[in-house]
Image 1 (cartoon, rainbow, N blue to C red):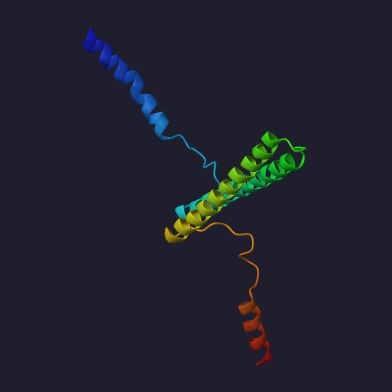
Image 2: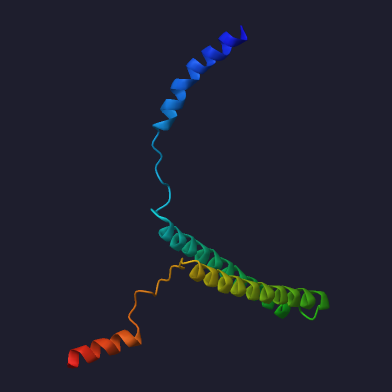
Length: 134
């Protein structure tokens, strides 16, 4: 009985495995190879760090306003100082993480997408000027 059950189960499952092998899955990310993936990951990391930096700026402003609006209340002044201090520590951590990520992405062969990389530099314009005068 058990032998018949396993044989019939194998006969029923075998066509399903063949159908699963012919399924076509589309790539949901806009990358086609590993080098494009590194640039995509770098741009996502850069955007996240930008958002975190903006939140840190808002927290710095909030801490400053808390100190200014304290009206001499020592608890409010201390709370504002703590907010500013911890926000400054957070900004240092954010800058260090950006530096570390940039270093590792460059070391591993990836790159962080930079919106200014296509702009001409001073050396490009000097080379163009010297070639035009020749």
